Length: 280
Image 1 (cartoon, one colour):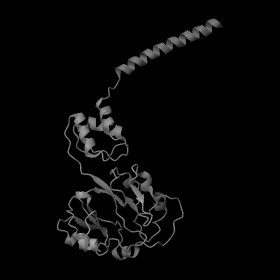
Image 2: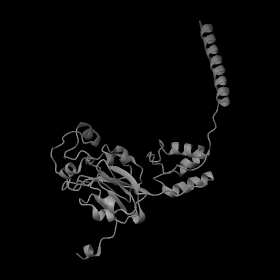
Image 3: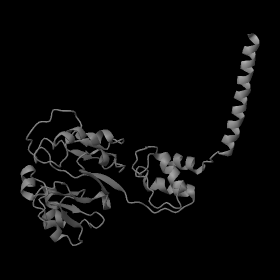
Image 4: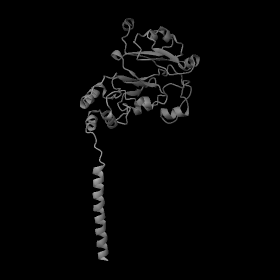
């Protein structure tokens, strides 16, 4: 009996050693050498793992940028140009400076502008609310104000305004990672160029209903009248599906559209106040 046990133990030991040796040589033969530059690039990245660059995280970004022949199409919105310059230097490549962007909430329909017609008493989630019904006002397109974007932001850059119940972005904290854009079920958040001196002009409305319905639902909604397109000297504005849109790559911040808009749906951000307004 003892001999049988010893023989079994010896056989198992021999088999274990044999398979260990086989696995060792197989591992050596099929070993994939990882480019050490991947670790270098990952160490340069901010480590936010926000996905704003279009990859799953900083490690994935590093793997792809190392394998790519050049830096075209790669940009870390959190680290910005400073981080990309360091990555380029580590890889011995050239990189073009990217344009800083910021999240913009294209809805200005606060409590004073959009009358509440019903009360939502369900889960405090924009996605759940949007899947059940259009919202608690007659506007089916505006911000629901339940904070999915707030939960998605890792940088504390977006909050729900307690007065208007509309999401508002802190320009100084926003890294343009795009997490809030993905989280908004209504699609009212957009990434736009920060603009010269952080100034931006955009249509703060996404309502695609016809003018009369839009105006009934929100006093500051875009009614698609087209007056802004007529006064724009740079052909930066188009009206599609009853709502105007300003192409920030063409806009020169002249603000003629802002003055022409009859409903004040167009926002002009961070511009100096007129002298008469300051005197008042």
